[in-house]
Length: 259
Image (cartoon, rainbow, N blue to C red):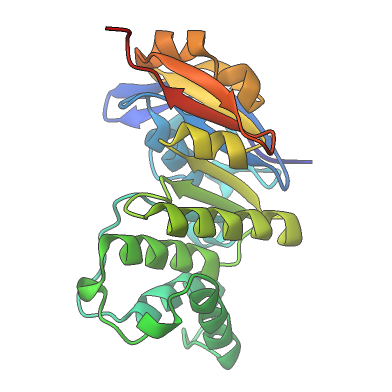
């Protein structure tokens, strides 16, 4: 079954579209990584899927037309973690992550014990338990990035949109975070759609890639079909070599021109 389906979707800001007739289909429980050079429209595509920018064309999530859903219904279906969020001042990490439970609150708008348990579990899984009482403003860049993901995970949605989730993370925390996301996908059936600058991480975690350039899809398919030296030279102006690790995983290695 399809979790997210876009047919000839154009989207952008004001009168100028950033995306041009993009068609993408993502199966339930799959991981799709959106890659492309700077300014290709990757973040705009995620925002269109989340209903955060005006879009034309057909866009469905969970089998329902996105435009037909209320804001609260969208928040129950789709969790979105932006790359550069505006973090409210004066909140602790726990307070901030609790905001992810807002779509599930009743008429009185008060968190239950179950909501608090979900937040505690998410903080533990993201190695944030020791920072639960810390003010957001005191966190490092990597800690803030994990807090943003924690808020999205606390929504307990079936579709998770992640905009550059490894920004500001060292390699160990980046791998741990992506492993956690992949466990959510395999154990809970969560559909993951992410943008990733790191092409090696994209190749090793996502089952399918979409390569954007100039707001249009220029290649799509398994990582081995999309991450080729020819396509990376054409769309990134990069000289690369595609290597295979001892575990059979793809690695994109930059190659210096011979002197």
